[in-house]
Amino acid sequence: MPQDPATGLSTLEALAAYLAAAFESGDSAQLAEAPAVAAQAEGTTHLAAAAGLPQLELRQAFARGEMSMATTLAIMKVIDLHLPGQAH
Image (tube, rainbow, N blue to C red; front, side, top):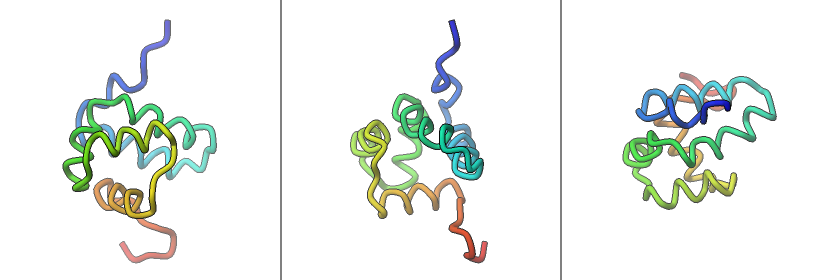
């Protein structure tokens, strides 16, 4: 039986690296799967705190696969992901 991918994402750093890799991959399947995995990851607790978001709200947004622009930008700041064309 395959291991649950959320299992290894218990820290902010691990979850941030996972999400950044999904965004940067350009792979639509990986990008579509990432929020569902993040919704189950223990590291989401830490990500919510670092982004200043309610944990339940972030988990629900990840589970739905739909996030507001404000939520997306807050997460991007925490995981140090930049929009194309922006200075780093």
